[in-house]
Amino acid sequence: MRTAYKRQLGAAITIAAVSALLGAAPPQPQPISNNANLTTSEVDGLAQHAEEYLQARANMVTTSPTQARMSGISATPAMANRTADEFSLLAAKGERYEQVDGGYTKAAVDVTVTESSLNGTTATLQLTEDTRLYMPFTPAEIAEGAPEYEEISLPHTVTFTRSADGTWLLASDHADTGPGPAPSTQVTEPDSADDTSGGVPDQAEGSKGTPSSTEELPNSSTKDVRLQAGYNYNNIVAYANKYWKSPNKGAYRTYGNDCTNFVSQAMKAGGWSIVGPTDPGRRSNNAKWFYTIFVERTSYTWAGAENWYWFAVKHSKRTKILDNVYQLVSSDVLQADWDRNGNINHTMVVTKKYNGVPYLTYHTTNTHNKSLKKIVADHGGAWWYAHRT
Image 1 (cartoon, rainbow, N blue to C red):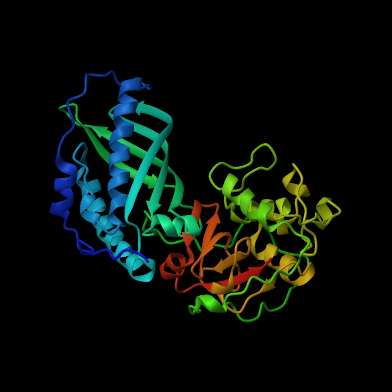
Image 2: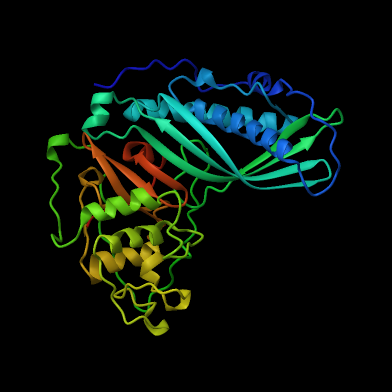
């Protein structure tokens, strides 16, 4: 049984409250010169401040959002106002998550700085946020196969402004969320622009038919019936679990919208064979599916979500569209058309299923074991296409 958690904070967070969180100044730093480099200790200090800020964001979507504390960092007035607004939205998001599947009990955030620079009084950090959002499962349930936590790996560009008294003020935070589902710690909407990782096919494909329903099913109604017994479905899941965070750069390039490229790699790891020949003249043919080290010699179906659909369902018949998204099982694929314009935008793979709920893993933004219930709750206006692989 899941433990019941009582939410301790409503969605409304005032600017004054967030200002209190942000307002305590850190210890005064040593004077520094206005050059293009920050010292190691300065980078470490700013990274710690950024981590505190991101931890506070993550805490807001848990069942105990009053844990949100940023006592070690100050912010500019504009950033304090923005943070107040976003904390309110994150608290509401956390309440929604709690209603649909119990939400998150706690969050753990770690920050890795990949690049830093100093321009006058502005310090910029390029960093990666690695967050674990713990789910309300008991140790016994986790031993039975329930996921212990959802994981997110999200790049950020964070800037700080040095005030006249030498205090560093958090000035901005840009999270590289991409066109996929909004990360659990963010309040952005996915980019519904057409997926540029694929392209226009050389022939019209017709109608997709009815999207998969999102109505919840009794757990007993879900059956694991495979289309192709010759595939290694464990390898599909193992590949996704291994490379969800760090791409397999030794074998594949990445795309700006990398979700379908990632799923194609996982399918190949599970035994999907290349369908060529691998020449530029065939890349726009949705009946082909191939990858080479050259973009122009890689089929649109490899990395384009819309193209992948037509290869998988119509031309190769390697997948079949399910009536309901809750029929998905591990190694199955879920695709989304965010704005219902007939063009699929995003592709994900199921890496766990527990008590009738699939858990999705995907790139852009790199996410591991996110509950289908949360994704559907965030994006109720989408069309969904659930593939049995």
